[in-house]
Amino acid sequence: MKKRAFIFLLFLGFISLLSDFTHEGARSIYGNYLGIIGVSAFLVAFISGLGEFLGQGLRIVTGYIADKTKKYWFMMILGYAVNLLVIPLLGLVDGSMWQIALVLIVLERIGKAIRAPAKSALTSFTAPHLGAGKAFAIQEALDQVGAFLGPLLVFMILGTSDADPLSKYQLSFGVLGIFAVLTLVLLVIAKTKYPNPDQFELSTGSSKITKNPIFIFYLVAICFIALGFIDYPVIALHLETTNTIDVIYIPLLYSVAMGVDALSALGFGQLYDKIGVKSLIIAILIAMLFAPFIFLSNSVVMQIIGVVLWGIGMGAQESILKSAIALIVKKEKRATAYGIFNSVFGFAWFVGSIIVGLLYEKSLLAVVIFSVSMEFLGAILLFVFYQKQKSLQQKNTETVPE
Image (cartoon, rainbow, N blue to C red; front, side, top):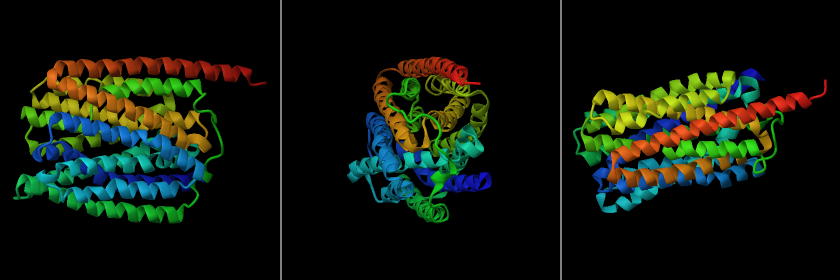
């Protein structure tokens, strides 16, 4: 069963690899592309935040539907189709209809909202055989290989084409559409081979969600992490505005961040299985320095270090945040739990993006202070969560009859 679970996890990982190749390749140029077709810095931040809000917030509904119907594969196929097929459509948009580009970018995030809770639940079903941290780390690492290669391909297209800037971006979106189709083909194959992946796991954990104090406190803690973590389109727009780094290298820099993300996910995922949430606290304290490095320096080296730190934070978040839920909520309610988790996280991210967008227009120092302070508060609350979880585990152990 362990080998079968591992192979299934690899299927999910390669689906993620191809899908991230597509949508992360596109996201690496959203900021610059929107700037070329005449979208303001505030609208870039607003749309980035709105996309994350809807992409996360709708999961409270899609997660419930996935658990209620048990149609995990249907939610995956529908979500990936919406998530990925809008990207080649961006290649048809120019400055005369920039509003359509904003709608398509938001739709891409909505597609992710449809499939994400089901995907997280399917990944978590392999946790009893592989370990929660390791399962999500492997999936995230393969995910980020695609997120590394996609922006790299975009960088090559932008650097080698002799077309005008807008045509280069449109060509990039069109080429990425090929990988969108490949993702859907592999997804159908995986569904055929593993029609009932929930059978990998027996029921464990708590069936309570809204009345689970540990789960609720965890949600409060991760809100502060989301509030202070700045989305890459804002970073890309800042790098372009300062002219410290040539615009054609910004997708390449994002590709580097995704590579760091993959390594970070593997490292911190393995560490999570050994020391629990403390691994996330360590990651946050390291990664929270990304903001001063990026926004308070005009040095190329310092800004690259900042993006690397940003990638560390992303990797730790993607692997560890989900791993914790796999251990505190039983499988029948897990897609719902992931939906609630992502909805709360997305709302906090949206609020944080609006605040960052407004602060960016006024003061870069204010952006940095806000980001660092929110991340630090999140780390403190996660430490309290760790103590509460440890105390509850000890209490449960003491009440078990000998």
